[in-house]
Amino acid sequence: GAVVSQHPSRVICKSGTSVKIECRSLDFQATTMFWYRQFPKQSLMLMATSNEGSKATYEQGVEKDKFLINHASLTLSTLTVTSAHPEDSSFYICSAGYSGEVSYGYTFGSGTRLTVV
Amino acid sequence: GQNIDQPTEMTATEGAIVQINCTYQTSGFNGLFWYQQHAGEAPTFLSYNVLDGLEEKGRFSSFLSRSKGYSYLLLKELQMKDSASYLCAVMDSNYQLIWGAGTKLIIKP
Image 1 (cartoon, rainbow over the protein chains, first blue to last red):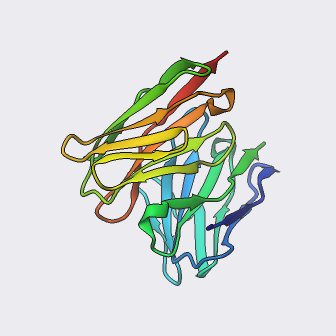
Image 2 (spheres, rainbow over the protein chains, first blue to last red):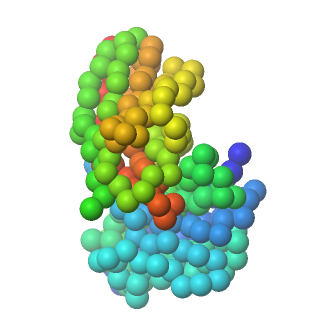
């Protein structure tokens, strides 16, 4: 089945530094990847939609200069949290569609727990 | 606007049956998904319904009524490991997933 590999799974960083999160589709081509953020006991919040070879589409209220998304190839998308602050601490998850087959839904990466101290 | 509603929390007993409801109002419809999410982990796919009716998959079944904007996830023979959040999501006309807030299911011995 479709697999999305996401890493790191956990990262602790100092306030003001930047953190890069990678998502790779291992056995399929992901033309579109979605980046979500999830705070404790809350549902997934879509941050942006990443399309291979073009600029990401950000949801309202998400700062594109703070959350840099790059989708340079059909198998790799990255999210960089720049100048991280404690309020950016959250669970970040990527997901990708499986070769356009809607019935498989979207496969999720395993998530990245970011803690900014 | 687009809206997905599901109960915040439910409690059930090990070995019993529980039904988690989901109602939706979205811009277009390309299917409804149920995902399971254990605490601290990413969601995992459970089921997909695009036509009316019941889809059965082992202990889990999912039902859809498009005319009523309604779905439910039925879990039978509950096990302690079924304690998790269950997320209802609808794929809209743009093939974007619209997520419910999730239902936290607590299983008691």
